[in-house]
Length: 246
Image (cartoon, rainbow, N blue to C red):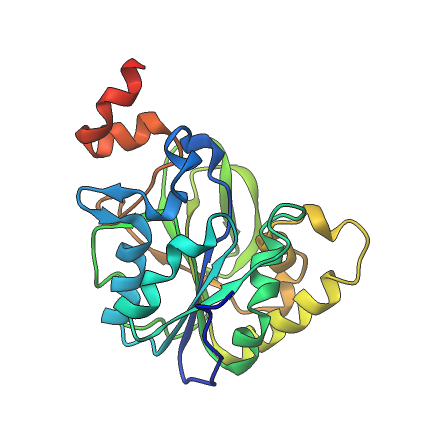
């Protein structure tokens, strides 16, 4: 795509996954990519970018696919942003978005972020994590969502769906330079396997969890929100309540 810049190695990087269809947010996503839906006056993806810029991240690779042209303005607004096209977003799961930007992982420490988040705390990435981690929110009871199992030292030993009284995934993670390079290698290996098309990128991490040094970086509910439906969006921004009546 014409608006995609060339890549240069940087000290600290980020990958933002913004290629998906966002079907659960229909009808809004019929004409607007979910990450570009405005929430209380700001597109969701810009809350993520602003937090990364505040943390001093030098290169932010936004992986696009669906309605990709609508993201081009981000390169003008944010000098750190580079658009990367995922040409496989319709055929493969989000493993394809990380693979599209796998060269970023090979260059050094990297934040990996979902694009359809609302980050209310622009300092959420500060201070910079000292080790690889997933950002997680503690909850009580059982959930079928993505969660983390920890050992007695606080190291993540499982990433998967379903768990009780633990930390839930919020869509943010950080990989130190050594772990980012390992993850790049694991992605290359996974892409050679039959059936990789259905994998979430987190499945690849889980398959190699013993080879990575991952902990939890706790966050609070007021710092970040993931809006998965029109109902959740309307509860967060009352300007969308009209959609619940249609």
